[in-house]
Image (cartoon, rainbow over all chains, first blue to last red; front, top):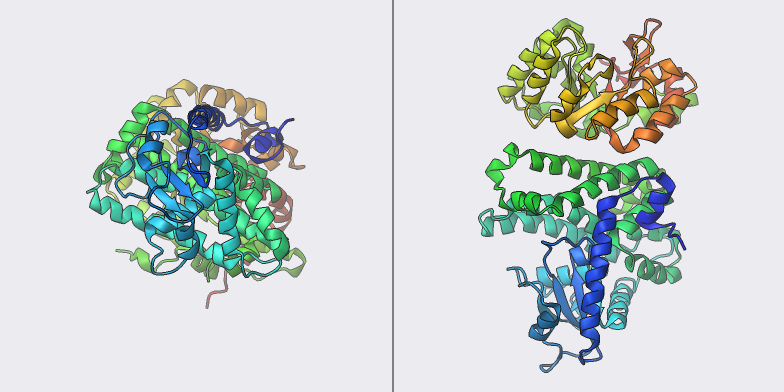
Length: 329
Length: 254
């Protein structure tokens, strides 16, 4: 059956093809299936799930993408939990995790659930929780992963109103976006600008997919009574972030901005999939950013991408009132 | 030197400058169009200050400091503009477009000059009817923006005519001149057809009415109504006014 929703649905409605988005999805699904087959032969704890995030979660793998993963446990914290990080990395044949030590760890659902907004809710805890909700896919323990995401949503939705965006969840999604932006600056200072061009490019585009892909379904909760919100969000967040964004554009009949928004993102994925262009961005230092036509193009794409989303949020009367009343204060 | 920080920046202050004396019967579309963001002007509307880029920028900021199209419609204006931009003035605009020459120019020289525009210039608008060697413009890449023409021109007016241009310039964007489309087809079907075909390429909109000689004049009330639907398809891109804002968009000044 032809999918009439998400990015594929937008392609059908508009007669446009987003070839790089399609290619990345096919590539990602192939690699996910390879990894799932490897894990299928392993015997690990029943309450465990190996969860991939980032490009994996967005289904945007390129040959150069990192392997950001968590080993998630739904049960009680214990020393002998398996898989260990080493075991998981071995099955994944994963690249080394990033310096900031958010990934490549054993993660306990209890920590994600009980520390929301508290002093112990570190950047790492917030990041893991948000990525689990907004941009993750499992290669083992699919049911554990699915239940964990639902359990997190239940925690956010413990007290909320009918036909209103749930503020606790909304505030945490917005807080995460602002954290990403602040972290970018501080990480660049720590790294003395290493990798500035590529990270800046991802901030302008990929991270906005992450944010908007969470923000839009949360705002759409205004259509649901409290009793229906959990099922709606659970189903929505099980979809790929770009599909959620495409759905929002189509729901609000903003097809033209949708096409321009996704066309910009499609071209960006084409750039990231080109090893030479990706290397250029990764090597680009901030003092040379103004001299790079490629970076100038990425900036332009980021603006086009953002412009479409802003038009959706601010120019559609049905969303505008919720943006005004819920997004600022 | 102008202190840019004191000038109108962004939507709210801009609206303070052009708050409407609203016509209740046309409230929705008038207020909607007037409040579009981002919106700015073409410096071509300030004929008296032609050639003084510093002054033209000041004039434009008096209406909006968010979007501007620096208009070098005559070939002899372009070197001065390039020289001005190379001096790296601290421009406040978030969207900076340059309208390239449509008259009095040598094509080979102009193509080279346009290539010298700094990267801060996000769009370079050209008229397809004056482009003889279309392939020569490929070097402008994604910054090149092709504008649809009015009824006085020999080409570049219809979907088919523009499609042949974009076939040779696949990276170029589209500048949608609403009034030009209206001048070919007042039913606005052509306008919609242009957007249907080139919506993925849309970079910005040119907005005005036309007088009986097809010259750009401030947007008339009946055109606001007529254009509203097609402009509703362009809410995510900058609009560049090619004439002064309508009187009823401007606040009363004491």
